[in-house]
Length: 264
Image 1 (cartoon, rainbow, N blue to C red):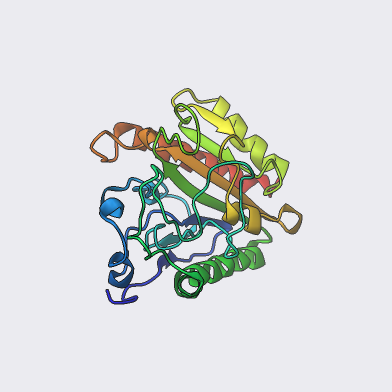
Image 2: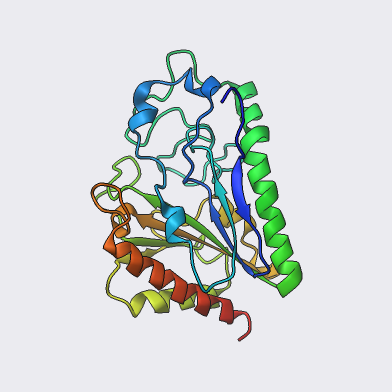
């Protein structure tokens, strides 16, 4: 890959009010960017590994967009301005210069400058968000509302971002601002009725740019970020585990219930 030879994202669109976004399960890094990087990116676990597979459902209609390129190229869940999302907490940049465990991603003097960041915005960030916006607007135009699920995962322990071990499921609604309360209450009720997965609402991860920007409950666009500890669906060899089936079944059942909230 010299600059960009593969699609920025994979996208499937059907007639459904449900849109699923997976911005961090991509692994591609173009050769021209890779040439400036240290070996740290090769062993990094920063990718939301296989979370897209958890959100592949049978018996449910949904549109879906999945990024193909690594978050080390550009973070699609951050604003293009690079503005901070979590005040007074550790974050990585729009174009990260270090891994979650503080390893430098770039050789000395090879970090992306503003011109390079702008190029990546236009090449990778903007096409993803233009397509996501189109999916959301098409759903709303057809059904009168859109439910946007932004799916993520992270290592169970990342001292840079949080102390101790992360709960299995971390629901973010930007403190209730990205969706109507009925959606939040429906998810909370579903989580409280199960015992397999630990969970928290609006804890360390309250929703990134996608949840905050697109979630407009006053316009019947309801966005929820679902962050998962990787042990909730992966085994130690990073294969989909037995728990993955339970997690997938849980979200299938819960999403079906959420789609009925608007009708009620």
